[in-house]
Image 1 (cartoon, one colour):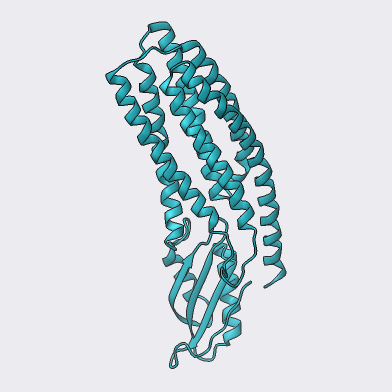
Image 2 (image 1 turned 135 degrees about the vertical axis):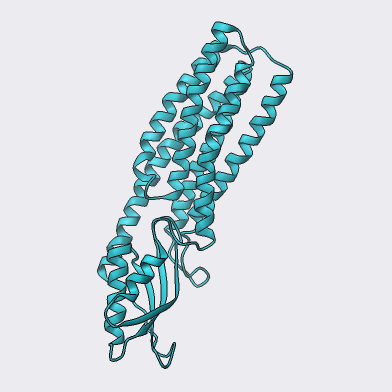
Length: 305
């Protein structure tokens, strides 16, 4: 493994450390507000606040799991888990998505009950609590912005906080409507709106994590282009058994069998393929097996740039 790949590992560790610090601050803020919002939901009898509090609970869970994912993800590979623990991040993100789906269903059921039996809502207290929540969510979003594109797990936490921010805005609007019109049915309407707003984004997160768990081709990589890139290199007569997958959101792995052109040097071809995969597709970890056209799978070599 070259020095360049090692440097990438150090960069990943540095990024993970920065993410952990930001996640810790966001967790402290979110947990403190969660307690206040749950109390406010019951004191002011607001389903919209309770719905927002439910999403806030998933935020707390997401942030805790994200921190654990960073801790476990940095553990080195061992004899039982030769790829290390990076996939813990993906499992955590998938769990968060499923948790959000569960919360949305709960809110929809509760809203139906409120439509059948409307209840009085204290709009002023509801609005104050939601306004505090809006500030907390905005701060948490700012803290998580830098890491959301580099980590699927941090992205999951960011999406939940973002959804809560929208929810807080909805609760404030609902509180104002109830205060000036007396329409208590606005409260369950807002609660349902919050649930429906977050579901499409939750689906995207669940889809992406499922693709990783199923060893799917990472987003942004088109397998026909990658195959053509290898086949077009000097010394390559053909390519088969090509596999591309991710262990986590920040790494891509590739294995391939390359048939050598007549007279081609196996070591030179393997290096050529590895360099192309790294520079063109960002694949730093690859295993290239070379073979003569007449004797497939005879000459094997591994190269990790």
